[in-house]
Amino acid sequence: MIVKKFSNEIPPPKSSDSYRILMILDHPFPSDTRVENEATALTKAGFEIFLLILSPQNGPSIEKHLGFTIIRVHVPKRRSNWMRGLSGTLPILSLFTAYHVLKLHRQYCFDAIHAHDLYMCGGALRAGKHAGIPVVGDLHEVWVSVLGLYAWSTRFPGKLFVSIRRWMRLEKKWANQLDKIIVITEDMRKRYISMVDTKVEIIALPNTINTEAFDEYPIDDEILQSHSSEFTLVYTGTINPHRGLSFLLNAMPLVLQQCNARLVIVGDGRIRPELEALAEDIHISDHVYFEGWQEQSKIKSYILASDVCLMPLIKCEQTEKAAPHKLFHYMYLKRPQIVTDCSFIQKVVESTDCGLVVPYGDVEALALTIIDLYRDPEGRQRMGENGHRAVLEQYNWEKSAQSLIEMYKGMRS
Image (cartoon, rainbow, N blue to C red; front, side, top):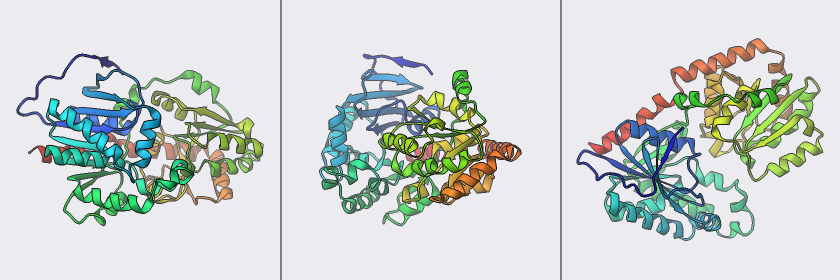
């Protein structure tokens, strides 16, 4: 993947038939697969995409990436965290975002603002109202639900400033002010349909896999060799409470009674030390490998090193309505998976027969399901083939992106 850097180059003046979209994001990029997929798809469809990043990330203030323009404003990490944390109580993040959006708008004259994540919508709406241009809210998660799971929002001192009730009011207020809303699944779409009083268009855009980009990632033979075992289990993703990894670890002692399995956890997060301590306490640390955060390109090799992949998510509003990237990564790479009974994921896995579903919290059921797949290599192969075929036919980004492209074509006409 080649990134062209240019600190002084200014994009050409806007042509009469051009449609410029400013996306805004408050965390480092590149690393967000959804944002990159959307920006790339819209660029290929003929739109001019600018991505404003307000984050602690260092890097060139302006650069070209995969055909779209990235503009970075460095925000110290502590300040960034506090602005986000207080965004439901004090409009500091909204004012800060609106200032930078309007500053860029005076230079580039955008036709639409595209805000990634609910908490960025306040600033986008302020700027959109002032500039007289439409605002699209791209809601990557059920933010109100997730707030009840994060440590910073539920522990002192953060809990003093985070009000779930206020966030619920803001969510409804902003949803009714947005011109368009993008969500991840049909269940999430229904949630917002019931919330808005206006006839705002709401589209479901799942985190399906961009097979073209994924195919370009190299295979790391060292990863394949280092995790080769009698039976390798892999989880990829962030390590947060709602990922259900303690549930998975607690099933491992039962699994190890039947086979010499290896569990590879690829990712990082706040509760990683707690999980490492749990693995020690239940005497499975020799069989569990915490790989830490890895580049997206390496995730492919970790999945290929597995016999079975896992998604032991807890059941909450966010996970019930989520469509994680890893679901489709596992499917595309022909790996059977074991998932918990979260609504969207369960529907996909059962309808395509690409894996097995267990009730969240039933440690024995999870362990027995893992053992069943260990004893059934032919079943694993069949499920893997089923998942791969389903991605090629239905759950791929090329197909999913059409709803996004058509939405913006409608706004341009």
